[in-house]
View (cartoon, rainbow, N blue to C red):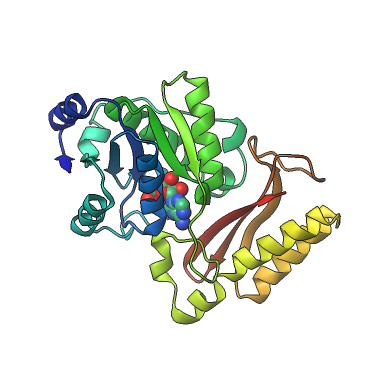
Length: 274
Ligand code: AMP
């Protein structure tokens, strides 16, 4: 596996490898990230991953400083997963001192995470666009775990005519249903036990909506279930799967999305409806 830390090393790797599939990450890798690598590998091109904990997608009161970092362990996992290249840019490479450009989005970035984390999607879109320009992948793989992020990145790629195909990959879960996340390690044992109830509540709500139950009442019930599990729900919403606009009755494609705080950890999950 080629390890590139400078634009020159990255350029040499690009020349050596030809077209690649790309998996951008913030490191602290787990089986969810590896599923993206596996999906990319299965499509046949050499796989490039990146690790960069992007400061601009964290709010001032968020966990940028304590976000888990394990570069050596991550490199080891990527090598074992069969990655051809890992791009490890510094903050100075990604954001040179005089940089003055960022991407602003409306549409699918407006609600939910966009409201809860002002500036988050601007930071995500800006860093992803920069990574695409550096790595120049033919395809890029993103996890459905961050459903809204996939829609925002897809919108940006379409709007900016970027020559890359975005491929979504289904969420990888623990056996009890909890979606894998780098932040799950911060759950206390009782919180870890309660955490899968987010997925349970979403799954049940999706079934109820499909069975014809009233949407508002179903969402209200799901919020109550989360509160009973000790969570502070931020939102539980039925949305159009691509635009992320809230919908009050079942239209397709629809997605149930939710965020809830459990202790100090903000859990995020979503399921298909139908
Ligand atoms: P992150 O390192 O959290 O920025 O995530 C990097 C990529 O991995 C993003 O596309 C995430 O959506 C994806 N990802 C994170 N957790 C999971 C999971 N449990 N299943 C599938 N993909 C995931």
